[in-house]
Length: 256
Image (cartoon, rainbow, N blue to C red; front, top):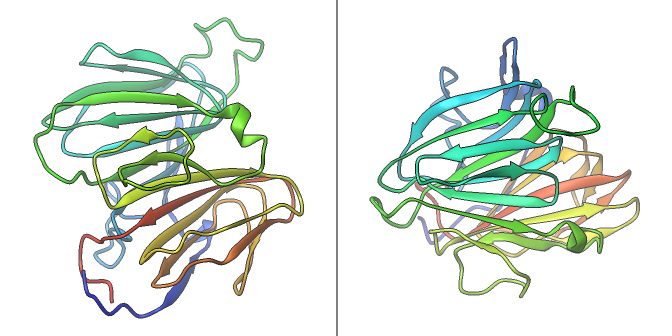
């Protein structure tokens, strides 16, 4: 990473994302993913994947492999059933974050299993954001962790959801295997504000609602901002909104 970064605020609108739209999946990709490839849009800081997915009931991602990646899943609506080759299984729902360390290799599946689950809304889509960052080292032992922060989200504060850093805001956080990265989240009511961290690289994503970013204007559902060499701006909700912020103190390449 260059020691002299050029301050930059790069707004990426929801409609400009790569799209995968098939019978069971509506997925929007903030970065190159799968068959969608743009050599100028492969990552920001340490973040390689920010997929905004809607999966139909009774369908999902069948068992598939991952390796050397820290994968954080954040559900906005519905429930997502996880199973992996390390023996972990469970249901991820709004307010419960999940981290999977792929390490030297893991197999897993993720499905909207609403038909099987006893829910009041058996035909509900599951809407979630999945984010990938690289680990500090390759070949680690695969792992899994989840964290319930639904009650804390009601406070309107910016909460640390996942972190590999030694310092964060003191709230409980899932541990990820990258000492330069942390994920924060906030659920905001109209008029509530949070302040962005101060870091060389920030990625702000608005999975639902509308907010206003100080100095940049309104951001709608699906919009993202890649911020370099500046921080501390206020994010204020225009209507009920949820935001996800990656704070990163390193990059995969020179982004000066």
